[in-house]
Length: 188
Image (cartoon, rainbow, N blue to C red; front, side, top):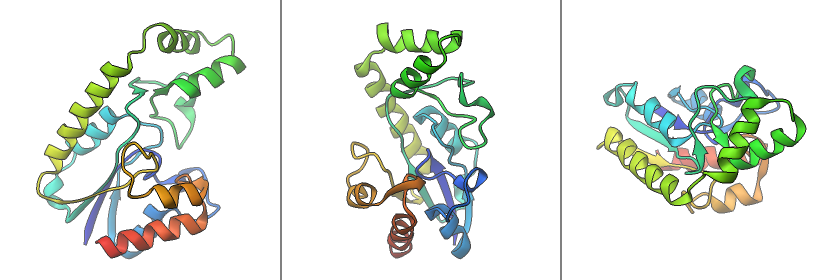
């Protein structure tokens, strides 16, 4: 069974930075042949590029973790560009606000903060997100597709697990990761 994983931090390989316990993608990789392209903090455009840059026909199943519609694409995050887990992440308003308060001399952070404060348009990003999700689903085509997420507005199917078992790896505790893994194995 060949499995492709794409998406954001809920599906990323956290072992590049943390080894406290295995995340559900790493547990799947112990049982199946897994290619994991997911990256922490990426927006839907980068998830689209993950799918666009690989031949889906080489996989039996695609597991996708679609992200928040409110991540703003950037080629280089003003803080996380050297972080092994978040080095390709995009901008998110709450993150930018937090970092801008703690690093008042970072001009890139000031610019991003002002964009979110003065120019961000929720309707625009909701529309772009819907288009990108549609494009992702077109690329996946008829390949079996399982959508996972820790974001309740993306999918409700995982809400109970993600709310009850919050933690460090893939936003889940060790027990939460094992529950997601077992649920996915049953779906596969």
